[in-house]
Structures are given as structure tokens and as C-alpha cells.
Amino acid sequence: MIDHLELRTLSVTDSVRFYREILGPLGYRLIVDGATKGFGTVAALDFFVAEGPPSANVHFAFASPDRATIDRIYQAAGRQGHTLDRAPALAPHIHPHYYAGYLRDPDGHLVELVCQRPE
Image (cartoon, rainbow, N blue to C red; front, side):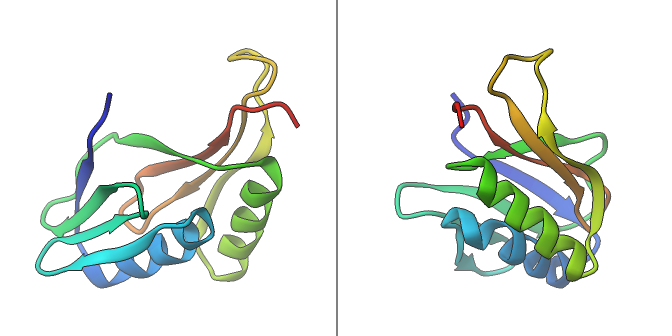
């Protein structure tokens, strides 16, 4: 079980903006506003960004309650000028209900939004 994840970033300001915009619809908000920024939900404080050399080759996924939320976040991210990687789609090679969309954060990390529930 993963308790939390912390990434290093070249720009905390850009990363906080990016994660606020894509994680807000999932119920995340900025909870810790110190040198290290911490995001979470009512249930858990589990994602942090801090200034420093970017972590390399990182891929992580945030759970979405449904496919429509992934579609909305992905479309909004495009309008907000964020880097889109792969459009939301089913990935039946993983399992029949695996639906995911992929973005790149300001440091190039692969950020996945995924719903593993049937439609």
C-alpha cells in the first residue's frame, strides 16, 4: 500500500497550479503550504511536490470515480495549456474496465488518471 508520494520539481509554482487544476475535480486540495506542498483529500494527505532536480522516469496514477471525470479533466487540461500525452481510452490489455487518460506535468512526469470500474 502506498502511503504518499513526493516529487521534486523545477518550479513549485507551476506544479502547484498544474496539480490544483487536474486534482481538484478528484477532491484533492492543497493542504500543506510550506516549502513542500502537500495535496490530499479529506481521507488522506498523500501527494507532495518540492523544489529540486526533477525526479526522473516517474509514472503515477490518480483514481477517478468515473470515466466522465477523466474526460472532463483531460479536456480542461488541454484548454489550460497543459501537455496532453494520451487521450482517455479503455485499456483492455490491462483489464476490460481499465479506462485511463495521460498528461505530462510541468517537469514531464507521466500523470495518469484512471477508473477501473465498469461504466
